[in-house]
Image (cartoon, rainbow over all chains, first blue to last red; front, side):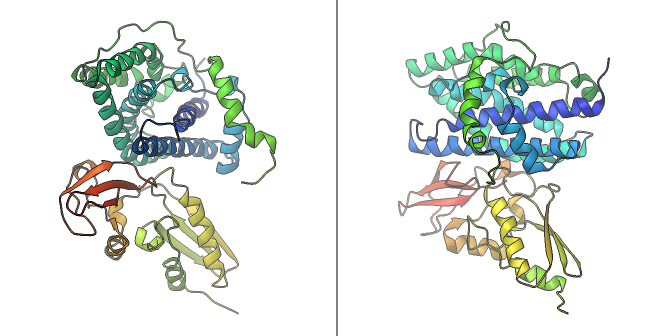
Length: 255
Length: 161
């Protein structure tokens, strides 16, 4: 059975918002802990950018469902359980070492930038508007994280090893960035979202080239990570316990 | 009965300052997209600068507070995303104010910020172009950090988007 296009669009918006929101939270965990002050500032900014992007996707979802943007966003972020989140597993994994967080952000940003360039021409006006806006901010992310991949890959033997280890661990998870949910096929057909397979090929091209130039190897293993967005690791539960604790202490509070 | 003109509303909006760059009004920042007035009911449309900027919510509250002082009964602030805000929307007057505030105005890029990201920036203190960017990210989402190799002072620039 083909799902209703509005339901498919709803699912897609929620998945996009959740990816950004959960990644933003993981990134924000480096605030006060990054290796140098400049990087502490930079990564906190990246986290805030991703949170801003999440709020745009949540807002579009609220409009589609006829809900109040602010109230609905808070409800989704603070009062859903892990099973109800639709983010990919890559963004919920613990932050690991610096190389791990940088590689994760880099792999995510390259995919996001490629996807946004295509979404800017979406047949859905609200999606195209968000994509045009977010794209300009993401350019800075990719420049930053790509520079870090080069720095780590071409730095010391230890930094290269840590970076390669992070790549090997994250690579199978990164495949979920391009998974096609059953419902999304109707959106691809209607020109609302790009074909994930085409985005993946473009991503493999640019990421592969940049990794080689940074003295790193793109892994080949793809198996082991489910492609469905309703399956999570236990790490998401602990992340949410922290992220939602204040809001759940006083659900009626006005912020 | 009191009446309020559209011009008065625009003038009042020019007195609402960006909370993170308090020398710049919302008009100079270029985020006000339209004003509609129906008797004593005003609707102001604004567009966000950086998506995650926390100042945006403060601006909405400040707009309502300022316009109410004109004697309006109801003030509604609506957000519109398109066309997306760009740093090219900052007015000439706004740029001059940024410069004297010590924040280098964003270079104009006519739609492609990547064209100007690597452009040399002049130190707002000594005017030297011997400067380096030390961080593309700064104390707010819209700022970058530089250092001047001539006068050795650090300074900030507005990030072009």
